[in-house]
Image (cartoon, rainbow, N blue to C red; front, side, top):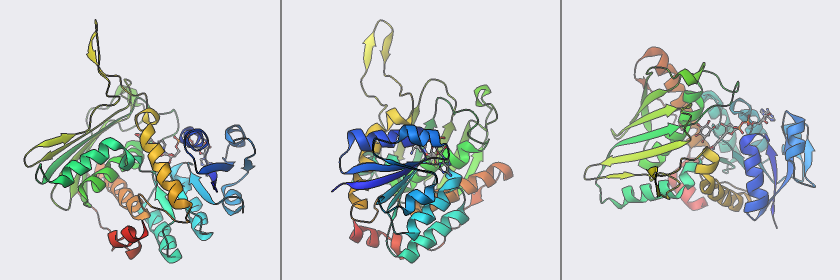
Length: 341
Ligand code: NAD
Ligand code: ISE
C-alpha cells in the first residue's frame, strides 16, 4: 500500500519533490497539495489530488498519512507543530525553523509525543560523494581530521524572496549540518568575516566567510557566495593528519576539445543533488510508511539553527560568538536512533 502524502508549498522545491514522488520513486502518492498561492497548488496537484486552502486542513485530513513541508522557513514551526499534534510523520525542508526558540518548541512537542516524526531536509547526508568522504574519514587511514573547507556557491538568488541575512540564516545551515555529520561533532562557536561585497549581490550581505569551531578543535571554514553567475558550485575538502580527502566536482565527465579540458557546472541544487534528494525520499517513504522518521532529526535542525543565530550575532559583533546547546533529549541519542532504525 502506498504512503498518502500531502505537500505544503508548491514552489521550486515543492514542485521538484512532487515530480520525484510521482515520476521517479515508488511507495508514495501525492494525494493533497496546498499553497498560500492557490493557483500554484492547483497547477501542481497531480490528477485526483485534493487542493486545500490551508496547511491545517491538509494536515488534519484523514486521507493524508504523512506531510512534506516546502513552504518558507518562517512558516515551518506552525506546520510542524500541527503535524506532531496529530502524530503524522513529516518531512520538513531546511531550515527546520528560523530561531533557536522556535526549534525548542518543535523539539519539546516531538519529545512529548514520544516518537520521532520529523525528518529535516539536509539532503547532503544522502549524497554518495559525502557518504564516501565520511567513510574515508571513519576508515582512519588519514589520521584525525584537522580542518574542513566547505564552499557553497549559488548562481543567483530569486528576486525579492530573501533578506540581506539570507546567506547566514538560510544557506549556512547546510554547511553547519554537514560539518556536524561528517565530523560527528558539535559546533561550539562561530565567527564571520565579510569581504568586499559582490556587485551582483544587490542588498544581500554576499559573499561571507564563516569559521565554525568544533568541540574537538577542528576548524571548518565556509565560503558562501550566492550570486556567482557561473552555476552551482559545491566543494568540500577535509584535511587530516596524514592526507586530505575531497569531494569530486559534479558532473564528473571531463570533456576535452579545441576549447580545452573541462567539466560542466550544475545550474542549481536540483541538478547537483538530484540523486541525493531521491535517496533522501526513498529513506523517508520507508520510515514514514511505518509511522516514524529517520535521517536528520529535530535535534540536527536545532543545532544548525543555533549556528545561524550565532552567525547573525557574530556578523554584528565582529567577535567569536559562543553556542550553548541544551542537553540532548534521549529521543535523539545515538542509541535510541540506532534501535529505532
Ligand atoms: P519558493 O518560494 O519557490 O516556494 C515556497 C512556496 O511556499 C511558495 O509557493 C509559497 O507561496 C508557499 N508558501 C509560503 N508560505 C506558506 C504558507 N504559510 N502556507 C502555504 N504555502 C506557503 O521557495 P523554495 O525555493 O521552493 O523553498 C521552499 C523551502 O525549501 C525553503 O525552506 C527553502 O529553504 C527550502 N529549500 C531547500 C533546498 C534544499 O536543497 N534542501 C533547496 C531549495 C529550497
Ligand atoms: C536553497 O534554499 C538550498 O537549500 C540549496 O541547497 C542551497 O544550496 C541554496 O543556497 C539555498 O538557497
